[in-house]
Image (cartoon, rainbow, N blue to C red; front, side, top):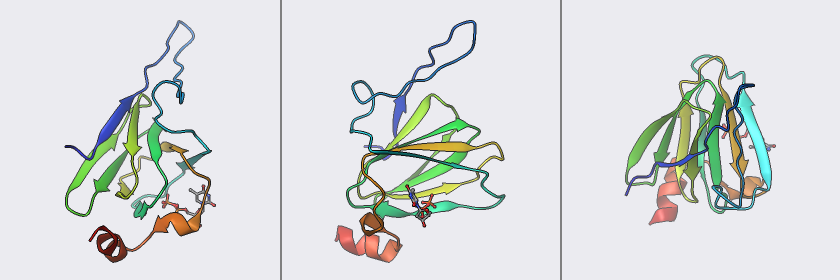
Length: 132
Ligand code: TYD
């Protein structure tokens, strides 16, 4: 089974332009407790490099694109987030990395939990050990 779980958020377009909605009742499989976005990422900067014990997230590039890597300790898969309609569902206990941010990239993240540093696993070795 693929580690890359894409959720399609359709554009509700009309002659004024596009609108994209994300709702728990419909496509988002958790209650959203936090929303944040990453922007103005400098050239050649990669981010992430951690996993979460409890936190689930959906990541969407609402503008521009970036390349996401998802790793479960055994397999490593990648996907380009390159559309405001394309959400990547990141379940618990998955290592994630974000690379190749375009200059105009705005990466929006919907999160199932409040910010909690103790939920992070920031070492790949610890991540692997936790899975054993
Ligand atoms: P971090 O999660 O390490 O960023 P990324 O995974 O995108 O590389 O977060 C960077 C810093 O921001 C870190 O000091 C924690 C802080 N932070 C918050 O205070 N609240 C948040 O919701 C997030 C995501 C990060």
